[in-house]
Image 1 (cartoon, rainbow, N blue to C red):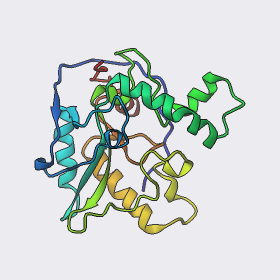
Image 2: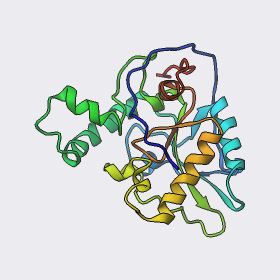
Image 3: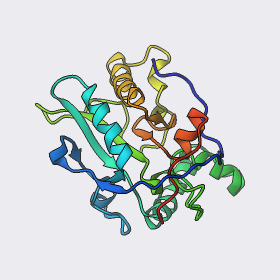
Length: 222
């Protein structure tokens, strides 16, 4: 079962380590499908980069999947320029979806940050994906090439993207079980989940630190 946990709050405990960004490749057994490059975002990169420890954890998580299944990676490290672009591209859509139009910008950002990190230029309290510790992914059947149905599309903005949305009200059992599988293998390997997005998992960044009550080990790479 995917638990009901709070959205991330500001958390500034840190003990940063030196850790290189490494290239995650398909010959490692993953499917790489970098979404923002495909969508034509001008600041997107087409390389899938993560911290070395994240790669190790991801390989471990993949080993927990059933036979003939693997991960499809949609996004990993983002330059700050891409984070700024995404914020400005998506903020109006999120404001409309969650009826935030009458709120102050500060109150709007309190909701927006659960779906798109604010593009704060602070290497010690950075947007999650700029650390190389955050990864967006799903599970794919290798034999058919089909993604498991998670009930939502990548970068959909709605309450159904909340990781435990299908734990409630006797909703679709297949989708619920697919979400549980992703959640279970990733958290078993040491990742934490961003509860507003079933596809988003963290290791070593401030979200991971917040949920584990540990110091963050990765700063932003700007």
